[in-house]
Image 1: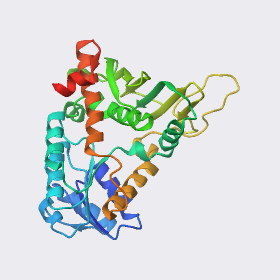
Image 2: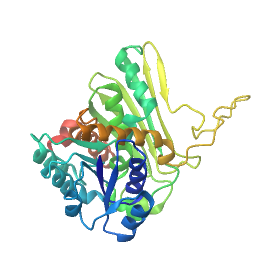
Image 3: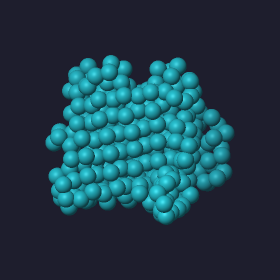
Length: 334
């Protein structure tokens, strides 16, 4: 099949590399406002370069991958749908939830599939955790712990436009908690602080946060996030039930150092970047999209799924700023 890629920044170029290695993909068509980025992709992956999204949609592509700036996501999703072309779009659907809801309304009723990029759904550990929960082998759940710790903060320009740590970082934890447990979040309480880069505080954001999520069956989920984790990129989940407890990410590249005598775990080189931690997951995610394009599977992460994680992020942002518990119903109605 022939896949178009809109946007060739860090993640777009990474997707181009992944797609070029998939057996299902015969050719790539790429476009980017920066001509040099498109030219580099063409030279590296043998892609065809076009000069606009309109030209790409008219180039006979079977599916499109939207990896452009967030502000462009709504228009590109809608353009793909209008052209009848399956769409994969990196999260978020839009910069704000209001815009995201408008996109959902605009595509509701269409039979053109749309997949939003939440790659943890394709990581083997999280897949196995979901299976363990759904099989009942853990018994009734009582506690979930989800962690995302970045090795260093992004640049000031990114922070200023990101919408805050809950919307651009923690949202991955929120999505995977919903996906693994099969439950919805009803209420949150969030706190945060700044002990590092001053520009994060100046942007009105926090560099380290914690949130307690209450799920609709009473399970408590604890989410921990930080922009500063000197040992590496740390993504983990613990799931505790009345019959058993399991962990995702408890492996030799875990960026933690044990100080217990005689303990050598973890012994590997710590993960230092999200592309290192989730290389296989990204490949599985885009393989899934080729199956969506082929019509052999439904979208594994819909716009509705993405918006649910977004409501949780909005609730945590409000909770942080107002120092109080916030229900999802409150922000959904706002």
